[in-house]
Image 1 (cartoon, rainbow, N blue to C red):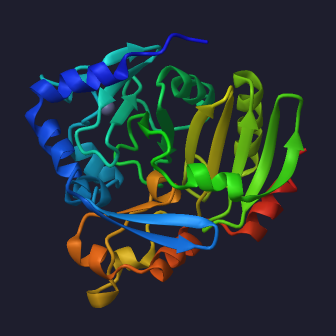
Image 2: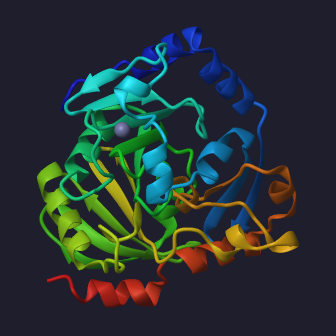
Length: 308
Ligand SMILES: [Zn+2]
């Protein structure tokens, strides 16, 4: 096992000197939340005004070209420090959803792609004790799709981490050290890899990635990934997506909900930057968004048939 990083001390030191980040973390203490029960699943809605920067982010090629990349070292605020880890830098996310929220960019400005990187994610989930790692595909919530990065937040904050233990899991493929399953019976179906070894888990993930459909014009299958480590094994939840933003994101008038789902939403925490949305959103709205942007169980089973 690799040595754990003193991440709590690092976050505390950053918040002492970085006013913008400190203010946003303090504001997080006052954010309103509401909780829904949907069968075996728990779903939370968080009213988080500071997240408008991400939910409304323009991620088309032209907009990206015209802005300075906020994950490149040269463009970061002077006060922002990082911890170097392999080819990545661990940073405090100044626009938090979690009480402790990290952004972990590659040191180079290179496109957001998951292929070949799941082992990095798994190792980060062990060195960042108490954190769950997540990855947003370039069209599935990443606000910097042109700069490879993971994020991490407090382990256990997303309800799906506990709920997955109550899911109805069907094994698709099993090895000595790992299992690939379809997890059903929660608000959204997903693939779940349970593994005791980085190399074996990584092979299984790459195999799954290789059979997911890639939409025309996209560089990789649309997906979100969560990864945590507990009791000597890793859980890797893979949420294949069929849509970036739901219809309600673009709707006019009363039907509009500014929700741009990413990994944290897949994990059961829906972020509403606008108060009007927080007040009116219902459990049915949340379930409708899942149905619209995620693949359903029948579609996951069709994909699973392609696994050898
Ligand atoms: Zn960059």
